[in-house]
Image (cartoon, protein in one colour):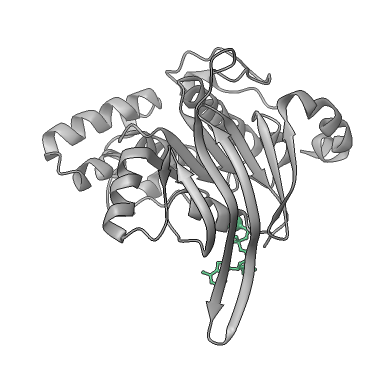
Length: 272
Ligand SMILES: Nc1ncnc2c1ncn2[C@@H]1O[C@H](COP(=O)(O)OP(=O)(O)OP(=O)(O)O)[C@@H](O)[C@H]1O
Ligand SMILES: [Mg+2]
């Protein structure tokens, strides 16, 4: 495992390269996500593709969860439903106690603004805006004036160790820096939950571990983090691994089971 360049961060990193203890252990954890028999099909022309085939899932507030599974197993579809970016066809989904079903785009946008932050593999930064403006964007949509939102954006960039990069455009930054800008943007509206679709998928191993350290810190602050990954070593840093297989949950591996799981995947971990 590569050494993490701690100078890149202003975080007080408490744990390093060890499995964290869920922050809510010992306290009664409230349910953040509850899915009951959720189905989703994509219809194109006369074809219908049944992608999610009855998902039952409960995730508590403050959990750090990864979703794994082969390509096409429905990971992004599930994450998009959880993040209210897409609808589902059947079943029920409660987010923070609220039923998410057949919402108007306005209702969905309001709930997303209040609760949710997103991080993507390809960063999804706006290429013609600098780092500070990218981070400030969610506050623009909330009607916060430019001076105030830029000031807050600088605070978040500072937390990511990127204050000196505030005026730089995305194409002047490395993958790891861009992902930290994207994480700052996802945090600026103070979400209760972060959804990350392969946040380390475009990064080298060392930079991936740096991004995971940031996500761990965010989780240690009590924010629920749910990420999709193809990488076993990345998944092993989370508290719970949900393995999707052809649209159903094949397995849920808890932190305590990771030893046997690691043994099972020893080969992959060796090569990671
Ligand atoms: N908008 C869409 N319209 C039609 N089919 C779709 C759409 N999005 C995804 N699919 C199909 O649904 C299935 C599941 O896709 P999904 O993106 O959820 O998989 P995934 O597990 O995230 O895969 P990967 O690991 O490659 O990202 C795939 O067969 C995909 O082609
Ligand atoms: Mg995907």
